[in-house]
Length: 93
Image (cartoon, rainbow, N blue to C red; front, side, top):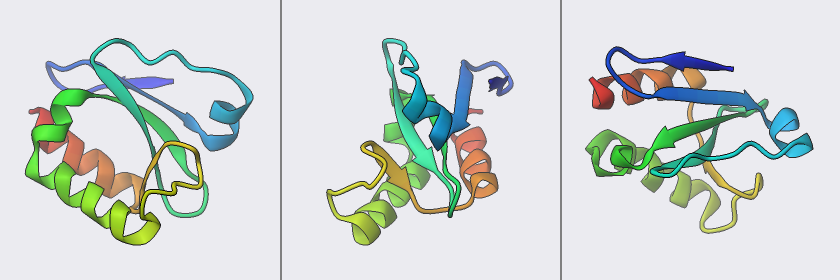
């Protein structure tokens, strides 16, 4: 499943159970993160997001909450899906 931000790449997401049950390819120039509280969704986003201060803040929160041990096996962002989508859409637009 995916959605398109205005003028930008497609961001795909799946529930953590779907991601665990099947491998989802990550295109070159992108990486996967898990987002949410409770039920987490997997998003594939461009590495250009790493340069955005708002995304760096999310990574700092993830480090504070999980350290370098992420329970999903990938980077887990401890915020609501709505907040994550809002921050990503701002940094992409």
